[in-house]
Image (cartoon, rainbow, N blue to C red; front, top):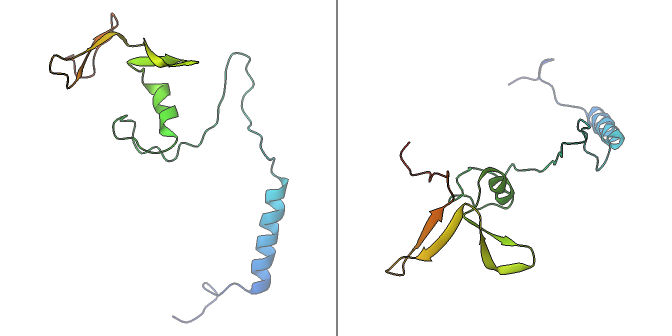
Length: 119
């Protein structure tokens, strides 16, 4: 393909000028600041969740999705700060092993439906 005016290589001087302008422009950007609308009753948190590939909690294995999933789903049980041994009720009010010992049976809080429940 012949070199024409529409397609020509970038000269070294032009490339260095372009990179220098870009670096100078980047230096003018504020560092470590997030801009959001100021409201007294609203908390704004900026987190990069670009590694979230699905909101299915069973299929999620990346680093940040647990924060996203915690904002979307309620857990069956929870732990209180300082007591990381004794589970406390959340969606489930009670839980016990199945008779064969291979699973668990959860009793859900009043008004809560299982995702598998018919609608």
